[in-house]
Image (cartoon, rainbow, N blue to C red; front, top):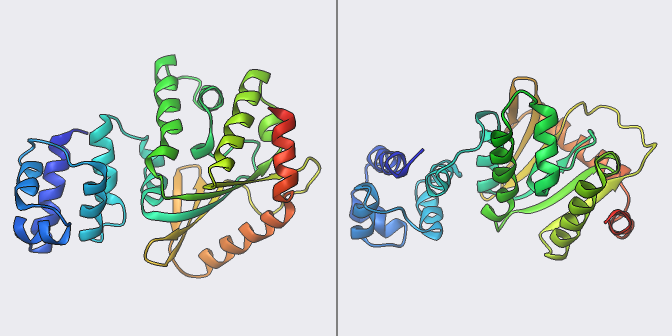
Length: 255
């Protein structure tokens, strides 16, 4: 995806909304000449402007996701696109992973590379490297997102020492930033009722959205009994984890 794709998407959003370039500029707190340049493919907006454009259309992160891809010249895998868009338009996420794996947005480079090598062994090494790099960049691309991560201690102890130490140190650094909270589930805890990773997002408009992994991709729940059930599962697994101080002690011992 390129700057041309962003320009076309921006123009389409504006035309559907029935706005002139001047009217859009006023809503997005910028100038009409800037909107003209962005639609004319002369330049990409800066991150702050892309966020304001997304907000002006109430695009809930979709336009911002197109900008992010164009700005980086890369894209997340199709099966991960829903989660990436939710991350871009949420204020917080509670991420519960019953499997022995650290949530993707918090993975360190060595750790992410091993995950991709194991999950998709038929991909070439360069593709593993590319996917790992994209995954590790995600946390910096959503600076306002607060993350609570719950996962088994086996997510660290079953990995090679160099990856384990790097990952533990990375998690400690993230927790020190105040944006990330890590709760570790100790060995021997029975995890029942959650077969795959589950994410519950608190969106900027005050709504709640859940996403659960399935064999054919992510399924998103925006309302109904399914959302309530998944939110309740998150609470249950958070109660099974070690408190903040004890979880931090586990990370320090594994670093």
